[in-house]
Picture 1 (cartoon, protein in one colour):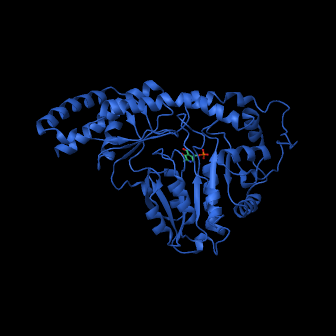
Picture 2 (tube, protein in one colour; picture 1 turned 90 degrees about the horizontal axis):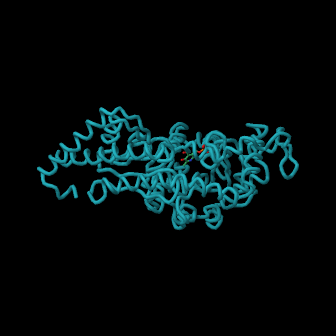
Picture 3 (cartoon, protein in one colour; picture 1 turned 90 degrees about the vertical axis):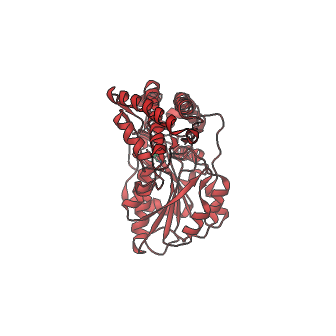
Amino acid sequence: MLQEMSKDDLTSRENELGNQFNAACQAGLKLDMTRGKPSPEQLDLANPMLSLPGDGVFTDSDGVDCRNYGGIDGLPQMKALFADILGCEPQDVIVSGNSSLTMMYDAVARAVLFGVPGGEKPWSQQGTVRFLCPAPGYDRHFEITSHLGFELLNVELTDEGPDMDRVEVLASDHAVKGIWCVPRYSNPTGITYTDEVARRLATMNAAPDFRIFWDNAYAEHHLTEEQQPVPDILQACRDAGHPDRVLMFTSTSKITMAGAGVSAMAASPNNIDDTRRHLSVQTIGPDKLNQLRHLNFFKNIEGLRAHMARIGKILKPKFDLVNELLEHNLGGKGIATWSQPKGGYFVNVNAPDDCARTIIDMAEKAGVKLTPAGAPFAYGLDPQNRVIRLAPSFPPLSDIRQAMEIFTLCVELAAIRKALN
Ligand SMILES: Cc1ncc(COP(=O)(O)O)c(C=O)c1O
Protein backbone atom coordinates (compact mmCIF):
# COMPACT_ATOMS: atom_id res chain seq x y z
CA MET A 1 0.00 0.00 0.00
CA LEU A 2 1.30 3.40 -1.01
CA GLN A 3 -0.01 4.90 2.22
CA GLU A 4 2.24 2.60 4.26
CA MET A 5 5.48 3.27 2.34
CA SER A 6 8.32 5.19 3.99
CA LYS A 7 9.76 8.28 2.33
CA ASP A 8 12.89 6.32 1.34
CA ASP A 9 10.82 3.55 -0.20
CA LEU A 10 8.76 6.10 -2.11
CA THR A 11 11.88 7.83 -3.38
CA SER A 12 13.53 4.64 -4.57
CA ARG A 13 10.30 3.47 -6.30
CA GLU A 14 10.03 6.91 -7.89
CA ASN A 15 13.56 6.51 -9.31
CA GLU A 16 12.83 3.05 -10.62
CA LEU A 17 9.54 4.05 -12.29
CA GLY A 18 11.02 7.32 -13.52
CA ASN A 19 13.72 5.37 -15.39
CA GLN A 20 11.11 3.06 -16.91
CA PHE A 21 9.07 6.09 -17.93
CA ASN A 22 12.05 7.76 -19.61
CA ALA A 23 12.79 4.54 -21.50
CA ALA A 24 9.15 4.36 -22.64
CA CYS A 25 9.36 7.97 -23.87
CA GLN A 26 12.42 7.05 -25.98
CA ALA A 27 10.68 4.04 -27.54
CA GLY A 28 8.59 6.17 -29.90
CA LEU A 29 5.41 4.12 -29.50
CA LYS A 30 2.10 5.26 -31.01
CA LEU A 31 -0.79 3.64 -29.19
CA ASP A 32 -4.39 4.81 -28.91
CA MET A 33 -6.86 3.91 -26.17
CA THR A 34 -9.35 6.71 -26.95
CA ARG A 35 -11.49 5.19 -29.66
CA GLY A 36 -14.80 3.81 -28.47
CA LYS A 37 -15.48 2.21 -31.81
CA PRO A 38 -15.70 -1.31 -33.24
CA SER A 39 -12.47 -3.00 -34.34
CA PRO A 40 -12.06 -4.18 -37.95
CA GLU A 41 -12.63 -7.81 -36.78
CA GLN A 42 -16.00 -6.81 -35.33
CA LEU A 43 -16.95 -4.97 -38.52
CA ASP A 44 -15.87 -7.99 -40.59
CA LEU A 45 -18.63 -10.03 -38.93
CA ALA A 46 -21.15 -7.78 -40.65
CA ASN A 47 -19.48 -7.92 -44.09
CA PRO A 48 -22.14 -10.25 -45.57
CA MET A 49 -24.46 -7.24 -45.26
CA LEU A 50 -22.49 -5.50 -48.00
CA SER A 51 -24.10 -7.74 -50.60
CA LEU A 52 -27.60 -7.40 -49.12
CA PRO A 53 -30.40 -6.92 -49.93
CA GLY A 54 -28.94 -8.08 -53.29
CA ASP A 55 -29.53 -7.41 -56.94
CA GLY A 56 -33.25 -7.29 -57.62
CA VAL A 57 -34.27 -7.51 -53.95
CA PHE A 58 -35.93 -4.31 -52.86
CA THR A 59 -39.25 -5.12 -51.19
CA ASP A 60 -39.85 -5.90 -47.55
CA SER A 61 -42.21 -8.61 -46.34
CA ASP A 62 -45.18 -6.23 -46.72
CA GLY A 63 -44.26 -5.52 -50.34
CA VAL A 64 -42.97 -1.99 -49.66
CA ASP A 65 -40.60 -0.84 -52.43
CA CYS A 66 -37.63 0.23 -50.32
CA ARG A 67 -35.98 2.05 -53.21
CA ASN A 68 -38.62 4.74 -53.17
CA TYR A 69 -39.64 7.66 -50.94
CA GLY A 70 -42.01 7.14 -48.03
CA GLY A 71 -42.28 5.10 -44.84
CA ILE A 72 -41.42 8.13 -42.75
CA ASP A 73 -41.15 6.21 -39.48
CA GLY A 74 -39.49 3.03 -40.79
CA LEU A 75 -40.34 -0.43 -42.07
CA PRO A 76 -42.80 -2.29 -39.81
CA GLN A 77 -40.42 -5.20 -39.28
CA MET A 78 -37.57 -2.86 -38.38
CA LYS A 79 -39.84 -1.18 -35.82
CA ALA A 80 -40.57 -4.63 -34.40
CA LEU A 81 -36.85 -5.44 -34.17
CA PHE A 82 -36.11 -2.19 -32.33
CA ALA A 83 -39.15 -2.76 -30.09
CA ASP A 84 -37.52 -6.05 -29.03
CA ILE A 85 -34.25 -4.22 -28.31
CA LEU A 86 -35.89 -1.38 -26.40
CA GLY A 87 -38.56 -3.45 -24.64
CA CYS A 88 -41.64 -1.73 -26.06
CA GLU A 89 -44.26 -2.17 -28.80
CA PRO A 90 -43.55 -1.61 -32.51
CA GLN A 91 -46.05 1.27 -32.64
CA ASP A 92 -43.95 3.11 -30.01
CA VAL A 93 -40.97 3.22 -32.39
CA ILE A 94 -39.67 5.55 -35.09
CA VAL A 95 -36.78 4.21 -37.19
CA SER A 96 -34.48 6.77 -38.75
CA GLY A 97 -31.04 7.16 -40.35
CA ASN A 98 -27.64 5.88 -39.32
CA SER A 99 -27.11 7.80 -36.08
CA SER A 100 -29.01 7.83 -32.79
CA LEU A 101 -26.96 10.86 -31.78
CA THR A 102 -28.53 12.77 -34.66
CA MET A 103 -31.97 11.68 -33.44
CA MET A 104 -31.14 12.93 -29.94
CA TYR A 105 -29.80 16.22 -31.26
CA ASP A 106 -32.95 16.66 -33.37
CA ALA A 107 -35.21 15.84 -30.41
CA VAL A 108 -33.52 18.47 -28.24
CA ALA A 109 -33.46 21.00 -31.11
CA ARG A 110 -37.19 20.48 -31.82
CA ALA A 111 -38.01 21.01 -28.16
CA VAL A 112 -35.93 24.19 -28.17
CA LEU A 113 -37.68 25.49 -31.28
CA PHE A 114 -41.23 24.18 -30.88
CA GLY A 115 -41.59 22.74 -27.36
CA VAL A 116 -42.84 19.25 -26.51
CA PRO A 117 -46.32 17.76 -25.91
CA GLY A 118 -47.54 18.95 -22.52
CA GLY A 119 -45.24 21.99 -22.51
CA GLU A 120 -46.57 25.53 -22.73
CA LYS A 121 -43.76 27.10 -24.73
CA PRO A 122 -40.66 26.16 -26.68
CA TRP A 123 -37.69 25.65 -24.37
CA SER A 124 -36.00 28.61 -26.06
CA GLN A 125 -38.75 30.94 -24.79
CA GLN A 126 -38.43 30.00 -21.14
CA GLY A 127 -35.36 32.02 -20.15
CA THR A 128 -32.48 30.07 -18.64
CA VAL A 129 -32.97 26.36 -19.19
CA ARG A 130 -30.91 23.65 -17.56
CA PHE A 131 -30.07 20.00 -18.22
CA LEU A 132 -28.91 17.28 -15.83
CA CYS A 133 -25.71 15.48 -16.77
CA PRO A 134 -25.01 12.35 -14.72
CA ALA A 135 -21.23 12.09 -14.63
CA PRO A 136 -19.02 10.35 -15.49
CA GLY A 137 -21.12 10.24 -18.66
CA TYR A 138 -21.01 10.52 -22.43
CA ASP A 139 -19.31 13.76 -23.54
CA ARG A 140 -21.31 14.04 -26.77
CA HIS A 141 -24.60 14.10 -24.85
CA PHE A 142 -23.36 16.99 -22.78
CA GLU A 143 -22.07 18.79 -25.87
CA ILE A 144 -25.51 18.64 -27.54
CA THR A 145 -27.13 20.45 -24.65
CA SER A 146 -24.37 23.00 -24.14
CA HIS A 147 -24.34 23.68 -27.89
CA LEU A 148 -28.10 24.28 -27.85
CA GLY A 149 -27.86 26.78 -25.01
CA PHE A 150 -28.53 24.85 -21.81
CA GLU A 151 -26.79 25.35 -18.52
CA LEU A 152 -25.36 21.95 -17.60
CA LEU A 153 -25.61 20.55 -14.10
CA ASN A 154 -23.32 17.66 -13.11
CA VAL A 155 -24.98 14.97 -10.99
CA GLU A 156 -22.95 12.12 -9.57
CA LEU A 157 -23.47 8.79 -11.33
CA THR A 158 -23.47 6.07 -8.66
CA ASP A 159 -23.34 2.30 -9.24
CA GLU A 160 -27.15 2.29 -9.39
CA GLY A 161 -27.69 5.29 -11.67
CA PRO A 162 -27.72 9.04 -11.04
CA ASP A 163 -27.74 10.21 -7.41
CA MET A 164 -31.53 10.44 -7.18
CA ASP A 165 -31.62 12.52 -3.99
CA ARG A 166 -29.79 15.22 -5.90
CA VAL A 167 -31.76 14.72 -9.14
CA GLU A 168 -35.08 15.10 -7.28
CA VAL A 169 -33.96 18.38 -5.73
CA LEU A 170 -32.63 19.78 -9.02
CA ALA A 171 -35.57 18.62 -11.19
CA SER A 172 -38.07 20.38 -8.91
CA ASP A 173 -36.74 23.59 -10.52
CA HIS A 174 -38.90 23.75 -13.64
CA ALA A 175 -36.08 25.42 -15.59
CA VAL A 176 -34.55 21.94 -15.63
CA LYS A 177 -35.82 20.37 -18.84
CA GLY A 178 -34.16 17.00 -19.01
CA ILE A 179 -31.59 14.44 -18.01
CA TRP A 180 -29.17 12.29 -20.04
CA CYS A 181 -29.22 8.59 -19.17
CA VAL A 182 -27.30 5.59 -20.52
CA PRO A 183 -29.27 2.96 -18.62
CA ARG A 184 -27.29 -0.19 -19.42
CA TYR A 185 -23.48 -0.56 -19.36
CA SER A 186 -23.20 3.21 -19.19
CA ASN A 187 -20.45 5.08 -20.98
CA PRO A 188 -17.91 5.09 -19.34
CA THR A 189 -18.51 3.46 -15.93
CA GLY A 190 -20.42 0.40 -17.20
CA ILE A 191 -23.16 0.57 -14.55
CA THR A 192 -26.77 -0.43 -15.20
CA TYR A 193 -29.65 1.56 -13.73
CA THR A 194 -31.77 -0.11 -11.05
CA ASP A 195 -35.56 -0.34 -11.14
CA GLU A 196 -35.69 1.97 -8.14
CA VAL A 197 -33.77 4.71 -9.96
CA ALA A 198 -36.10 4.36 -12.95
CA ARG A 199 -39.13 4.54 -10.65
CA ARG A 200 -37.85 7.70 -8.99
CA LEU A 201 -37.07 9.31 -12.36
CA ALA A 202 -40.61 8.50 -13.50
CA THR A 203 -42.40 9.69 -10.37
CA MET A 204 -40.35 12.72 -9.28
CA ASN A 205 -41.73 16.24 -9.34
CA ALA A 206 -40.47 17.88 -12.55
CA ALA A 207 -41.60 20.36 -15.20
CA PRO A 208 -44.48 19.10 -17.39
CA ASP A 209 -42.14 19.40 -20.37
CA PHE A 210 -39.24 17.60 -18.62
CA ARG A 211 -37.80 14.73 -20.68
CA ILE A 212 -35.61 11.76 -19.78
CA PHE A 213 -33.24 11.08 -22.68
CA TRP A 214 -32.84 7.32 -22.21
CA ASP A 215 -30.01 6.36 -24.56
CA ASN A 216 -29.86 2.58 -24.57
CA ALA A 217 -26.83 2.53 -26.88
CA TYR A 218 -25.45 -0.65 -25.25
CA ALA A 219 -28.76 -2.50 -24.98
CA GLU A 220 -27.39 -5.70 -26.54
CA HIS A 221 -23.70 -5.35 -25.75
CA HIS A 222 -23.00 -8.01 -23.12
CA LEU A 223 -19.55 -9.27 -22.17
CA THR A 224 -20.70 -12.06 -19.85
CA GLU A 225 -23.51 -14.57 -19.54
CA GLU A 226 -24.95 -12.44 -16.77
CA GLN A 227 -27.04 -10.00 -18.79
CA GLN A 228 -28.04 -7.21 -16.48
CA PRO A 229 -31.76 -6.40 -16.94
CA VAL A 230 -32.60 -2.83 -17.86
CA PRO A 231 -35.57 -1.13 -16.14
CA ASP A 232 -38.78 -0.63 -18.14
CA ILE A 233 -38.77 3.15 -17.97
CA LEU A 234 -41.62 3.60 -20.45
CA GLN A 235 -43.94 1.52 -18.25
CA ALA A 236 -42.63 3.23 -15.11
CA CYS A 237 -43.52 6.61 -16.62
CA ARG A 238 -46.99 5.37 -17.62
CA ASP A 239 -47.55 3.96 -14.12
CA ALA A 240 -46.48 7.27 -12.60
CA GLY A 241 -49.00 9.19 -14.72
CA HIS A 242 -46.19 10.81 -16.76
CA PRO A 243 -46.40 8.75 -19.97
CA ASP A 244 -44.73 11.46 -22.05
CA ARG A 245 -41.70 11.91 -19.80
CA VAL A 246 -39.25 9.57 -21.53
CA LEU A 247 -37.68 9.39 -25.00
CA MET A 248 -35.70 6.21 -25.62
CA PHE A 249 -32.96 5.85 -28.24
CA THR A 250 -30.72 3.15 -29.64
CA SER A 251 -28.92 2.15 -32.83
CA THR A 252 -27.08 -0.69 -34.52
CA SER A 253 -23.89 1.40 -34.80
CA LYS A 254 -21.94 -0.98 -32.55
CA ILE A 255 -23.87 -4.01 -33.73
CA THR A 256 -23.26 -3.91 -37.48
CA MET A 257 -21.30 -0.99 -38.94
CA ALA A 258 -20.71 2.17 -36.95
CA GLY A 259 -20.99 4.45 -39.96
CA ALA A 260 -23.83 2.60 -41.66
CA GLY A 261 -26.18 1.33 -39.00
CA VAL A 262 -29.82 2.14 -38.29
CA SER A 263 -31.11 4.23 -35.37
CA ALA A 264 -34.43 4.39 -33.57
CA MET A 265 -36.35 6.22 -30.89
CA ALA A 266 -39.35 5.03 -28.88
CA ALA A 267 -41.79 6.94 -26.72
CA SER A 268 -45.46 7.54 -25.84
CA PRO A 269 -48.09 8.02 -28.60
CA ASN A 270 -48.09 11.80 -27.96
CA ASN A 271 -44.33 12.05 -28.40
CA ILE A 272 -44.25 9.71 -31.40
CA ASP A 273 -47.08 11.61 -33.17
CA ASP A 274 -45.38 14.92 -32.48
CA THR A 275 -42.01 13.63 -33.74
CA ARG A 276 -43.59 12.12 -36.87
CA ARG A 277 -45.28 15.46 -37.61
CA HIS A 278 -41.94 17.29 -37.49
CA LEU A 279 -40.09 14.52 -39.35
CA SER A 280 -42.52 14.68 -42.24
CA VAL A 281 -41.36 18.25 -42.83
CA GLN A 282 -37.70 17.35 -42.44
CA THR A 283 -37.59 14.35 -44.81
CA ILE A 284 -39.63 12.35 -47.35
CA GLY A 285 -38.39 9.16 -45.77
CA PRO A 286 -35.36 7.36 -44.33
CA ASP A 287 -32.94 4.93 -46.02
CA LYS A 288 -35.24 1.90 -46.13
CA LEU A 289 -32.78 -0.17 -48.17
CA ASN A 290 -30.39 -0.12 -45.22
CA GLN A 291 -33.25 -1.18 -42.96
CA LEU A 292 -34.04 -4.02 -45.38
CA ARG A 293 -30.36 -4.99 -45.47
CA HIS A 294 -30.34 -5.23 -41.67
CA LEU A 295 -33.58 -7.22 -41.62
CA ASN A 296 -32.33 -9.69 -44.19
CA PHE A 297 -29.05 -10.06 -42.33
CA PHE A 298 -30.52 -10.66 -38.85
CA LYS A 299 -33.95 -12.09 -39.71
CA ASN A 300 -35.10 -11.43 -36.12
CA ILE A 301 -33.95 -10.54 -32.61
CA GLU A 302 -32.49 -14.04 -32.09
CA GLY A 303 -30.28 -13.50 -35.14
CA LEU A 304 -29.15 -10.14 -33.79
CA ARG A 305 -28.37 -11.62 -30.39
CA ALA A 306 -26.38 -14.48 -31.92
CA HIS A 307 -24.35 -11.84 -33.80
CA MET A 308 -23.78 -9.90 -30.57
CA ALA A 309 -22.56 -13.08 -28.86
CA ARG A 310 -19.90 -13.36 -31.59
CA ILE A 311 -18.93 -9.72 -31.02
CA GLY A 312 -18.77 -10.36 -27.27
CA LYS A 313 -16.23 -13.13 -27.91
CA ILE A 314 -13.97 -10.63 -29.70
CA LEU A 315 -14.34 -7.97 -27.02
CA LYS A 316 -14.12 -10.08 -23.87
CA PRO A 317 -10.38 -10.93 -24.11
CA LYS A 318 -9.59 -7.22 -24.55
CA PHE A 319 -11.52 -6.24 -21.43
CA ASP A 320 -9.98 -9.19 -19.56
CA LEU A 321 -6.48 -8.06 -20.54
CA VAL A 322 -7.13 -4.50 -19.36
CA ASN A 323 -8.37 -5.82 -16.04
CA GLU A 324 -5.49 -8.29 -15.72
CA LEU A 325 -2.86 -5.57 -16.18
CA LEU A 326 -4.62 -3.12 -13.89
CA GLU A 327 -4.81 -5.83 -11.24
CA HIS A 328 -1.23 -7.02 -11.77
CA ASN A 329 0.37 -3.58 -11.81
CA LEU A 330 -1.89 -1.56 -9.50
CA GLY A 331 -3.86 -4.12 -7.47
CA GLY A 332 -3.50 -3.84 -3.69
CA LYS A 333 -1.41 -0.65 -3.91
CA GLY A 334 -4.14 1.70 -2.69
CA ILE A 335 -3.67 3.91 -5.74
CA ALA A 336 -6.59 3.41 -8.09
CA THR A 337 -9.94 1.71 -8.52
CA TRP A 338 -11.50 0.65 -11.80
CA SER A 339 -14.72 -0.73 -13.25
CA GLN A 340 -15.10 -4.34 -14.39
CA PRO A 341 -18.01 -3.87 -16.78
CA LYS A 342 -20.34 -6.68 -17.76
CA GLY A 343 -21.02 -5.01 -21.09
CA GLY A 344 -20.56 -1.85 -23.12
CA TYR A 345 -17.38 -0.34 -24.46
CA PHE A 346 -15.36 1.22 -21.66
CA VAL A 347 -13.33 0.74 -18.52
CA ASN A 348 -13.38 3.62 -16.06
CA VAL A 349 -10.35 4.21 -13.87
CA ASN A 350 -10.44 6.41 -10.78
CA ALA A 351 -6.87 7.64 -10.26
CA PRO A 352 -5.79 9.54 -7.12
CA ASP A 353 -7.50 12.93 -6.81
CA ASP A 354 -5.84 15.72 -8.81
CA CYS A 355 -3.82 13.24 -10.91
CA ALA A 356 -5.90 12.41 -14.03
CA ARG A 357 -4.62 15.30 -16.14
CA THR A 358 -0.98 14.61 -15.19
CA ILE A 359 -1.32 10.88 -15.94
CA ILE A 360 -2.91 11.53 -19.33
CA ASP A 361 -0.16 14.02 -20.24
CA MET A 362 2.55 11.60 -19.12
CA ALA A 363 1.02 8.73 -21.09
CA GLU A 364 0.91 10.91 -24.18
CA LYS A 365 4.64 11.66 -23.83
CA ALA A 366 5.26 7.90 -23.65
CA GLY A 367 3.22 7.32 -26.80
CA VAL A 368 -0.21 6.35 -25.39
CA LYS A 369 -3.18 8.50 -26.29
CA LEU A 370 -5.98 8.57 -23.72
CA THR A 371 -9.37 10.32 -23.67
CA PRO A 372 -8.80 13.91 -22.47
CA ALA A 373 -9.13 14.43 -18.73
CA GLY A 374 -12.56 15.74 -17.75
CA ALA A 375 -14.27 14.61 -20.98
CA PRO A 376 -16.93 12.54 -19.16
CA PHE A 377 -18.09 15.62 -17.18
CA ALA A 378 -20.22 18.63 -18.05
CA TYR A 379 -18.04 21.37 -19.57
CA GLY A 380 -15.12 18.89 -19.61
CA LEU A 381 -14.37 19.60 -15.95
CA ASP A 382 -13.84 16.70 -13.57
CA PRO A 383 -14.17 18.34 -10.12
CA GLN A 384 -11.78 15.79 -8.59
CA ASN A 385 -9.52 15.48 -11.64
CA ARG A 386 -9.34 11.72 -11.21
CA VAL A 387 -11.48 9.96 -13.87
CA ILE A 388 -9.78 8.30 -16.86
CA ARG A 389 -11.77 6.52 -19.58
CA LEU A 390 -10.13 3.56 -21.33
CA ALA A 391 -11.55 2.27 -24.62
CA PRO A 392 -10.25 -1.26 -25.34
CA SER A 393 -12.52 -2.21 -28.27
CA PHE A 394 -10.46 -0.93 -31.22
CA PRO A 395 -6.76 -1.75 -30.62
CA PRO A 396 -5.43 -5.28 -31.03
CA LEU A 397 -4.47 -7.23 -27.89
CA SER A 398 -0.75 -6.57 -28.45
CA ASP A 399 -1.34 -2.79 -28.45
CA ILE A 400 -3.58 -3.01 -25.40
CA ARG A 401 -0.86 -4.88 -23.52
CA GLN A 402 1.81 -2.26 -24.30
CA ALA A 403 -0.56 0.65 -23.69
CA MET A 404 -1.69 -0.72 -20.33
CA GLU A 405 1.90 -1.31 -19.16
CA ILE A 406 2.64 2.34 -19.86
CA PHE A 407 -0.66 3.58 -18.46
CA THR A 408 -0.28 1.73 -15.16
CA LEU A 409 3.32 2.94 -14.91
CA CYS A 410 2.10 6.54 -15.30
CA VAL A 411 -0.64 6.04 -12.70
CA GLU A 412 1.77 4.67 -10.12
CA LEU A 413 4.43 7.28 -10.83
CA ALA A 414 1.94 10.14 -10.56
CA ALA A 415 0.57 8.70 -7.30
CA ILE A 416 4.06 8.38 -5.81
CA ARG A 417 5.06 11.88 -6.86
CA LYS A 418 1.87 13.20 -5.30
CA ALA A 419 2.65 11.32 -2.08
CA LEU A 420 6.22 12.68 -2.04
CA ASN A 421 4.95 16.22 -2.47
C1 LIG B 1 -23.92 6.33 -25.06
C2 LIG B 1 -23.76 6.50 -26.53
N1 LIG B 1 -24.79 6.94 -27.27
C3 LIG B 1 -24.68 7.11 -28.61
C4 LIG B 1 -23.51 6.86 -29.27
C5 LIG B 1 -23.44 7.09 -30.74
O1 LIG B 1 -24.48 6.41 -31.36
P1 LIG B 1 -24.77 6.57 -32.92
O2 LIG B 1 -23.62 5.99 -33.66
O3 LIG B 1 -26.03 5.78 -33.10
O4 LIG B 1 -24.99 8.01 -33.23
C6 LIG B 1 -22.40 6.40 -28.54
C7 LIG B 1 -21.11 6.17 -29.21
O5 LIG B 1 -20.10 5.99 -28.62
C8 LIG B 1 -22.53 6.23 -27.15
O6 LIG B 1 -21.51 5.81 -26.39
